[in-house]
Length: 257
Image (tube, rainbow, N blue to C red; front, top):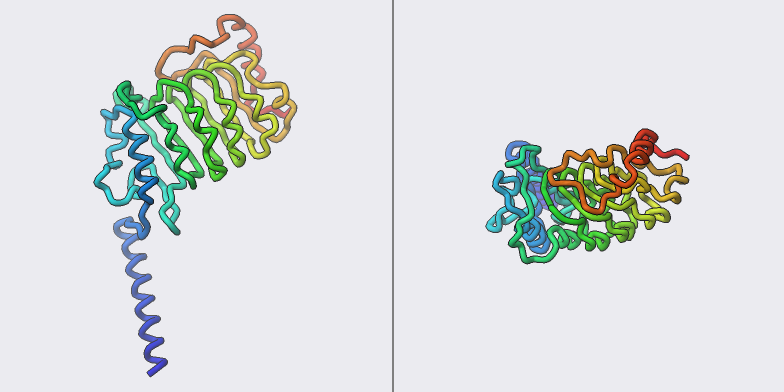
């Protein structure tokens, strides 16, 4: 009798596992749900944009599980959002853009509440403003920031270096001005920075970073961005265009000085 009970329980467990595997293989269904907090954060982010092309079309408030939304990847153990990849299109009518009537603060600032986020990728979604200074408060789980063709403007916030485990910062094809913050000079993990095709100063790489051999910095094409919007007023390109060309010619994507 005891052996029979064990056999039945094992058979039951095997049956459940088989059903779950079949479910995933056929329908792509998931056995985990996102938290109410993560869902609210994502919906708040969506609300900051006008999305005529439906890039956020699967992000619905009546959806019970944000882990099934396009561009959202969750951790299987508990449903925490660990990756966010929102990609519009290069077509001008397919780019979500900042809603001028949005009254929830700085668009995108609330993403820092995704406590377990590891990778953030946003492309062809137009912020039409600066990088939220609040992003310097992302948890140390974040290792990757990629925001391209988003009409980011102004200087890069120096406190992004406060994200202790950040390894990759890709901000190419925007309209950023200023230079790479010198706060990254003492960062322990950063190994890749791409600020190419922006409107940054010709002195855009701090000397302290030029002396490091463990970091790749890409910065060519200043003033040649294809991101929507016009060059930022703070750009120094018109002051020293010849130096910009000189620096751009020397940037071979890797600084190994």
